[in-house]
Amino acid sequence: TLCRADFMRVPLPAARMTAATGRADAVGIAAPCHSPRAEKSGHGTLHPAASPGRARRMTADTIIFDLDGTLVDTAGDLTASLNHALGVLGRPPIDPSGVRAMVGHGARKLLERGLAATGAMTAELVETGIRPFLDHYAANIAVHSRPFDGTEAALSKLEADGLRLAICTNKPVELAKSLVAELGWSGRFRALLGADSRPWKKPVPRHLTDTLQAAGGSAAIFVGDSRTDAD
Image (cartoon, rainbow, N blue to C red; front, side, top):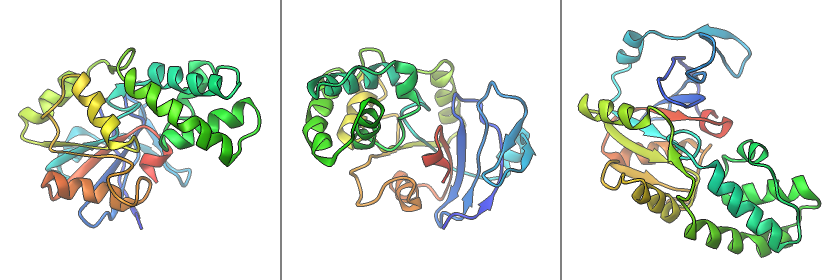
């Protein structure tokens, strides 16, 4: 179980940050880089943003990132694929702004939420729609998806500082690898674990600690953008 909290600000377009060790015994949350200089914990307590010096004292050797909504703005392509699947099922499309709030637990959960937002959601509809969704997304994975502003420079700076980079995402691993390749990032990350890389996935802490182990690190800072990443 994740327990001890430590709060800091991260200079990336991420809304939440988790600091993890190989025992997964620490969790932190950071506000978006454009928010006021205060963070709110899950217990409702406000904490000031930490200084860069405080971040350095954590002595992490690895930075693990979520992918969608953290490193890459994938909302456009996810919206197109979700709406394709909804169309196959006879449902109306959903606006991209609505889809952004649905992302975070993987493709199946996204489809479930899309169905619930447009009518009844049943297991049968999900089974019928998931393949059209995944096939469309695989064929159009980087039509609109782009790294957030400042991400390339931040990754380069972290690498130059000698830190290992890794990805822990709830996207199916082959789709995650495909997106990373399309963005020209092949070979940049020491490890990439997806939703189907293990029998468990976020918010199960072991998904994160397995990523850290695969990257060859001993302690990490995890950067994400959703409640799934902070839990």
